[in-house]
Length: 110
Image (cartoon, rainbow, N blue to C red; front, side, top):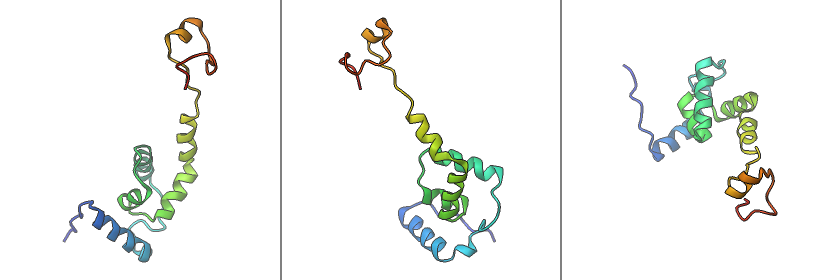
């Protein structure tokens, strides 16, 4: 008989995490290689901002395995590098003047 999946309520999530942390060797994908589908799902969930514990529950992996795979794929670097890009000023004055860095001149500077 197939098990019914429990709804993702805070209490069920807490219980699942406790079970995973104490009985980690019983997790479905424990010590198994990551498939392309799992890596794709990990990337999608990570970029959507899903927290690591929920990703671990969804992928049926330990939290440690999820963190390790995120590190191996360098997903943190990719997220932070996107936000480090220089933001150009969008005020009308700077667009007309063609000024790149208007932090000291412009009232719209961020």
